[in-house]
Image (cartoon, rainbow, N blue to C red; front, top):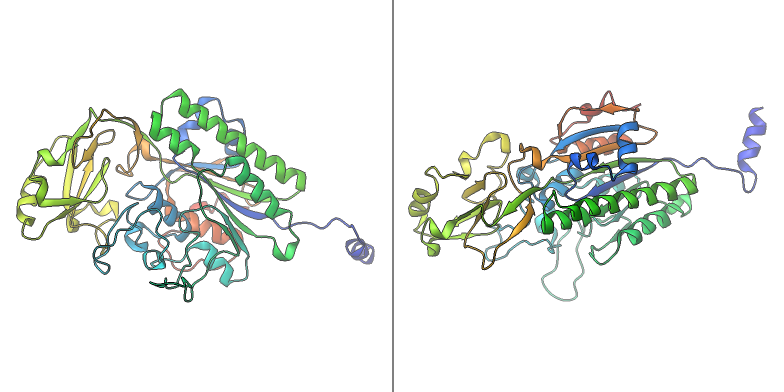
Length: 403
């Protein structure tokens, strides 16, 4: 009988069992309670049949810090991506933005695709903040722009918002059709539709609900494509943060609290990284550190320990955090503004993020308590059976949820 089975496997056209691919899917800005709106049959089915939870993002509850935490297992205070915009005293006059691909800014913690590639696991990224970075390398400062050292996924795509969700799903399904020797075992997939709608219209607007429904249809398309290929997959579906309703009617204007020539602000609206100008430190602190309605400010060293945001050199000297639903800005906007935003306290219910685990590695019908998103990288390492290294998170969160 054993010989017959062996011969069957060797015969041309014989069915070969495919190993399960690990798919890390980010739905930017997707709150867990969006599943309760009755427009997510695919995601709700995965949630009820697999493992689900509300996940606590890291502070600040911004896109780039949390996406980098999800794939490194490190908090922003450790990995160095401390905001969507930031400065570094080692690079005076330079500003990090969401278009920055210089490894200097990213090299503080190794992403899971580099960890996996070093251990012989092929990876591919259909968009993910930082996945286009030549991690561990050095960017030249003149032409020709040939990076020295560093590593990237075997396959990666530069983010472009004009690439539709359908095109993104089809690209992943095309990767899955490859022969085994060049087929990725870890794939990331990123969608921004829900976050964009949440910012523009607010989390409670029908147009945001429509974006949630559209996202669910794309997940259904992915599931159907994998089923057609008979390709088993462990899906880890996450969000980077939630979304809260905001309005320019609920705004703390910093220029109205102190002299606008005394300080700089790198980011604003939900939290404000404050840089006093030389010689104006005492003046700025006196104005900001006193009690304010709907806002609290701290010196860097005094930021509450639970936020894990007070040691990295890129964290500003002063930090102001708005009450959830309020805003903090340097100047009053020229026209009224409403919609949604994130960046608030990561303990706020509105900032909670989606987590769903589904596939052959996950036990059915498990609901976990709220956990920190630093645990996602260790989960991925366990699914891939690789050594994820020493990180802030732990896969023990999922001990009762995995087969």
